[in-house]
Amino acid sequence: MIKRVMKGMLVSGLALLWLPLGAAALNCQVETPASGPETALTRHLGAGCTAQEREARAVDAAQLLQAFREGKGIDLSGVVILGDLSLDALPVSPLPPEFEGMKELQGHEVRVIPGSMMIVNSVVRGAIKHRSAQGLLVVKGPVTFSGTRFEQVVDLSRVVFIQPVTLSGAAFLKESYFVQGRFLRGLFAEKTAFGQHTRFHRSVFQGPVTFQQSRFNGMAEFLEVGFEKDANLSRTSFKLGTGFSGSRFQGLADFSDASFDREAFFTFTQFDHDADFRRATFRSTADFSDASFKGRDDFSTALFEKGSQFTRAVRSATVQAPPERDNAIVQYAVIFMLLTFGALLIIYRIRRGKA
Image (cartoon, rainbow, N blue to C red):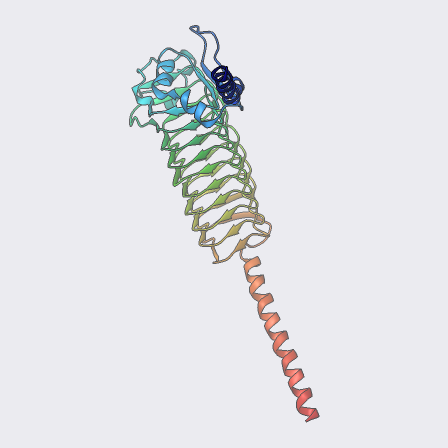
């Protein structure tokens, strides 16, 4: 009788221990669609999944590469991706007929991802690389990396993005390279954290661009970049050296409330439209030498803590000379010191007169 009671209590205890685990397993919802030739590789892990469950259901980068080889896209959410994704391993493809008129694709090896690249609210453990020195990668579908953490290098240089690219809320812990990229429908990177080194050297943005409230924690290179539409870099933070030299802004260039903690170079930069630098803060060298401002440039409330250089800059409609604010601060300080000295001198004379 006692043995039966103890056995029952043991079973009941095990059942109680199992219930939370079972409940957690039920809360971890996994969405995978039916397979088919046109279906993207899809895996969505719900908010109820624990970190351990996400690791247990991790996706290997080889699966993504295989999906691309089969002409599929990827649609991943809340997952962990293991291993390096080398896009140079994709086969060389004939140039799609709809792109035959694009001069930048002529004379190059072309690799094509016909579908989307959707990696949302996920963790990418390995590197993503396209390092072909001669070839180009064409991504026909939208690219969305919103809320995803990239723990290794992301090198998507020499990539033609046909649809919009969204990086909002993503975190790049290491280097991120988009050298000689072409963004036909724009780039959206609000509140994005960039890591040790970010390069968009010689890229072209044919659509609108936003880096609003983003943070560049390492060097940021936007050298010889073409911004054909509006570029919004308001409230963006640049922690190390920043370069926009040789770039061209054909739309509005909005740097309002941006902060540059180290050197900022805009030499030979061309602003075809208005340039808004109101309330921008430059804590080190700010070099706009040989820049061209064809629209209205507004530095009226910008702060240059170590001065600014506008040598040979061409300015057609300046709202206010750039150094005025920092000069005004010095002037106010001098006036305050003179007033203080005058007040002390008056007090001294009054006391001496009484004596």
